[in-house]
Image (cartoon, rainbow, N blue to C red; front, side, top):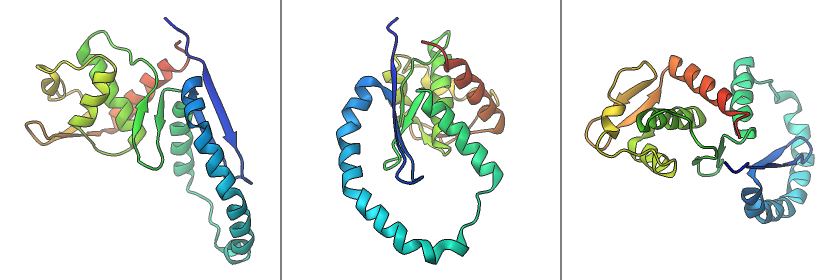
Length: 185
């Protein structure tokens, strides 16, 4: 297998922190956009921070501890190059090969990662697109794979228009899966 080199760029516009990480080619592709964004917004952010600071001084409230922990978990897996989340569009891109002994188990693992990364309901068509990228889409058996009760997913809808949501045990399984993927080359 080819070793994927993960590259990370971190910008700290006075703790505004912006991070871009992924394969070297991915970072190179988006670096010009990042540079353009920084050049356009650095003076704007400094100017607005100066204007807003006196107004917001007494209104700053610390985040709830559980929110901080959840965000750190999400960042951990994104920073380790398992997936990339486009903050503007909400689209998820899985950056590593998803493990599994069969197409069905790989498809379930794709869904676990997507649901964890999105922290929301996802459609069957979104799962299909990612399974196609991971070479695990098995059209005749795909829908049936997610009809089986395994405790990880809540499936709603029938036919081709169904959605999945992650259960609490499903979230734990997703974390376990991504932990196993962190140091795999």
